[in-house]
Length: 401
Image (tube, rainbow, N blue to C red; front, side, top):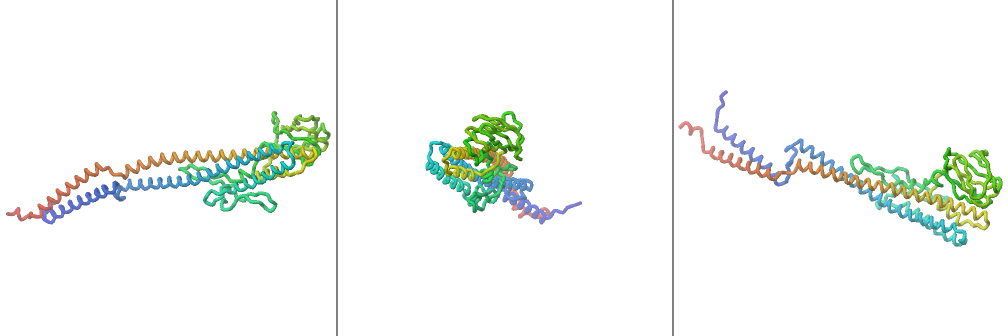
């Protein structure tokens, strides 16, 4: 097929060539001005889509970092508050040991009880601490109201919930928020955490419960037993139903062992005195302090009353120890979460560096290459303009002359 060459066609081709060169030159000028290869998505649709996805990942990392900062602040406050609570419980232990001294007067014990009441109120205030943003630290998810309050009977109750939030601080990496106060201050196991024992408050003798626990031979099936003295040197062991299951003779300081449990009693119990041993229950730390204060404020003039008070003080001291251990456990758990936050931050930073490097390869301009291309396009445009200028003075009629 024959194609006709006309002046208009030659002008059109020259103009299209110049426009194309000018377009390329404008694109290169934008790249050089912004320092970006991807000025618009049409420059490289695949790379642009990839870059948008990576941008979203970086934005998600920023959200994770904000989450981590928030929960780290709350866990840091928890650490500080539990450290204060631990110091408070150490003071309680010190006062309880001091109060257990037989040489103290009743006035001395009342003074100790007054200080313990002040400590009780301070611990209650500490348990109702906020995180600086108006949210109660130990309330679980119900953190818009104070978690601890006194009821009409004067007993401290917990009004929060048991929810412990889990916060994402890195892709598929979660840390636990502050521990609910019910797990720190309320449900504290009594005794040694597994077994608890106590003297009957109605005992008329001077028997002191010195030690108890599981026997070395094992075999305890979780049952509770009651040791009832039938004489100052003899006893019966009753099961939970009040049925005799064992009996024996006893001397002060001797252990009574039955059903995988052991009890060591000193002093001089009388017939009818009883001691109970069985699975540990739970008691809140506030009730333990109230119990300790109550024991100190109780007048004790007879040997039996003094023995009952000493038994109560020793039992409360064991419960204070358990409460202190619970706070230490909570601090350890919070410390582990803070360490996990630091690890997550390291992971985020490493991933962010990799992603930013990939984004740089996708977006950042190679200036040396771009300048070289710009110079080539400029030369090509100048050449096209020169050819067009010369064509303006030419006509096909010149060839017919």
